[in-house]
Image (tube, helix red, strand yellow):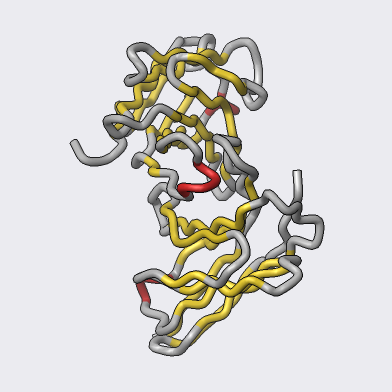
Length: 116
Length: 110
């Protein structure tokens, strides 16, 4: 597809279960970012990939959160032992190298996670 | 990181121009000024960005103060579809993640 694709679009899970959220960036975009947005709140940065490496993981809220990226393409965000506070929309974005200069970060539609 | 300050909310009448201000008094010489907006129930979308000179594109104009301590996003003719939260963000060279603040919630009245 032409844009950033995320799946699932909606996920309802029970507290304590693990979830995986997937992001397919735009082809050729080597930079990939994950953000979280709780209801009525702003975006929180989680992690950034350049290629398959993650130079900045500073936003991951706890060790229950992890992410990986393979083939400089698909990325998976995994949340283990989910808690109700993890309920949010998880947004993925991608860009060409040099975001500051190129300017444009492309966001997906997000994966809405609800933890019961 | 240099921070930005924006009004929490603004209101505009449809088909009138809108000037959205942003203060960034601690901006450094290598910081670019980016504007994004987030429509209801959607991910953010890029609007415009610049470094020193004013910029125009099909969506908006960006006016940057001479001392770069403030900037203004200009929507030339607001439509109902422009109702969104507008974020003013600074970022340095490279792929530094964009840090989104609270932004300005723009309401457009028909």
